[in-house]
Length: 104
Image (cartoon, rainbow, N blue to C red; front, side, top):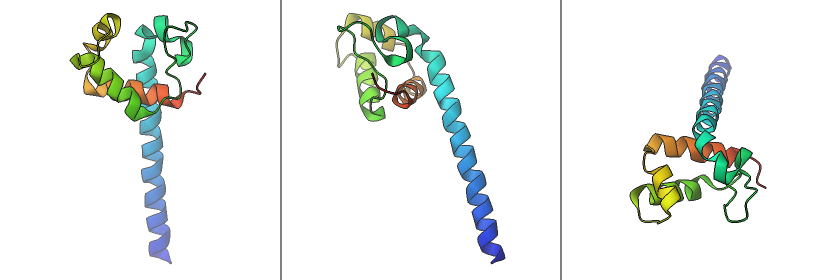
């Protein structure tokens, strides 16, 4: 009855907050992606067959690759330099952004 309505209202408010937070993460990730555009293309779709498109890729995959380039377990002179300064938070934001895009 009344308690069901209150629980529903509380859940709705919490879910709205989650959606707003995720939208903020996407925008923050988009801002960080500016330095990626030269190789991985606008909206994560590469025009160069030598550079992978990132749009729509799995978050775990993207994070694994960025962490690998950052810590040197994956070797690519360009990516090691680009990822070297990324924090865990930066990587999370970039992965969320690229995952949110439609793949090419």
